[in-house]
Length: 116
Length: 110
Image (cartoon, rainbow over the protein chains, first blue to last red):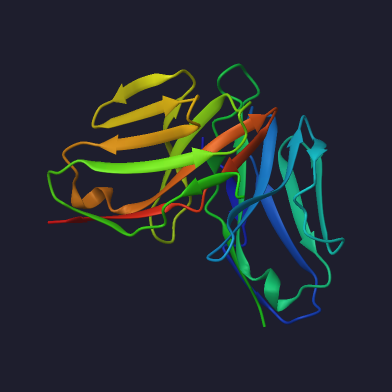
């Protein structure tokens, strides 16, 4: 398996623009997580899905952030409008919902977002 | 109070020494504990997990858990320069929710 695939690897945009980050989880994994990492705040959980259903989005910072998982093999994280403070590395991770496996996260390579 | 606390370091040890990384957590009901390694510019990678009090060994790595003290540690024996990375302590607080500490930077000097 190719692992968790994220795109794009790098995104540079201007303040106010819409940004869409994409994630393909590992085939067969039914839990998907979006994390954001910054120097100041570390790795923060934004939202997680189980069987394509959002379970907890309490980490989503503002209404400008939204996430969807239309099917088992694809998820998006959208920021509209983007702001400079959204600059961070955004990681997608997936896990297999089976005893002792569902907590072991496999991370994608991340998207480095810079909002100017 | 942060939910998962780690000393940010950097922790510097000579090659061949034992590196000791520590972590405390606030949610007493937490059941699952993890250590991830993150090289600079890369994504976190799971290296150890522990569920029960005591020690768990895997090669050069030993994870230690003390639920009464809400304390988790990672020992790296015979440290190598390739172990230089940031080590993230992670705690599952229930269901699917895993919270990460800020990480400890480790430097192993050749």
